[in-house]
Length: 323
Length: 274
Image 1 (cartoon, each protein chain N blue to C red):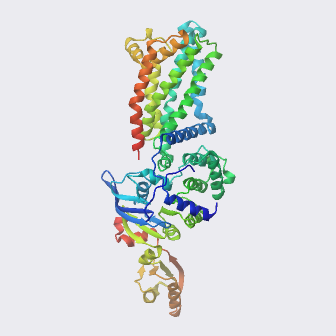
Image 2: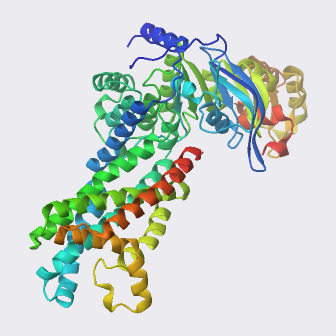
């Protein structure tokens, strides 16, 4: 890297967002959002499409000015000192922002040169990254022939050229198959082990659960919940036990057994199945044993994990509003 | 790279944040890198050069064949008028590419990546315009080569060279207009369509291909004030007579004015684009 001017920076959080608001005309995309991200941790911004996650990331990445409020990156205000912020962030967007016509290596080389690597330095760094992201074999093929997963990997590799201490990942696994998603998760974990701070947006509860130390749930531009994955999950219950009885006439008896053991009210669905929230997986066994003791036979049993929708319904408490 | 060194480097960068604004030399270096990017794209997809390689061949041969006998008595007599005309026509039309490429970048998220990097915001714009100058050079060379093959012999070689430089300069100035359109318009095809709508009449309602003397009076009036006509006349004077006419001055002033007005507007639109 070329010589850089050292500037002392306050110790403190990697990201500090206070009362951030972004308006597009009448539409309020982000509405008074505040959160902090301690250095070295992973923050998951969780929310449905259109919740304002990407808008928040765009403000933090100096791509969009906030209407009001402040956002600091390692103590640098994104508005007053965008140049300093750009030196320490890497951004991977929802859509792979790389050149289709060029090869993977050429893409990396161009961005490395832009980041003031020397010719030789850029080549070395590109080889490292191609190796690290398992793209060495495809390095000299045009991107047109790349799979979605390879494109994402290249996009992420491009963000990591200068080893930025803070990385924004905007929906890093949307549209990827499960195996590629796992690989992406492993990569993110490796980054964090290397000391990076990561802010990722996702629509998947599971993804936030797997990666994030802290989760901020966003809906309609507001923070509706905040905390660790465990904290959020315990607030909505871990799942729903759903049973189909062999003999529908036993529904009432079965219902009372379930209510007693699970400690929640049983709902009877239109198809006649019984559903009860369970906070602990071992309760499922208890319920099944309890039913067998009463001689009630079960045709089908399933444990249904809460979907993001259910988390939202619970967190916002207003079904109409969140759909 | 081991994890330990990654961590040390990360810590180093956190402690020593460079907050320097991009320098002039840094901006120049970034712009050159981005110009190289534009040219690399051409290398992978040579069809991007279609309008500056194939078009000059087709236009020169076609117009020489169609108009040569009628206007100048023979193809050979027509070439001294036609080569400067096609030269201007091809270069002016090629400027649309700047807008189309920029619009494409903005559409595909590459734009966001550039803007989140510690480089001058204007660098991608300058890079694109610089890469396009290479296209104009290719266009000029192609027209002259095709002309020579068909039997064109300029009276003044230095004059022809100066004429080519004048055309390239004008094309560069004009490409700021399309850079602005590229930033402001919603899609690349829209830029292409709108640009051709303006450029087609501008290049044809001129003295580029036929003398304006026999045109109906209103068209003649338009053709005579058309900046394209002045540029064509300037190049003809340089190449065929080796003289510096007043049209050269008009062309230089016109191109410079366009650039002085459009460059700041285009830069502003580009930097403010979110």
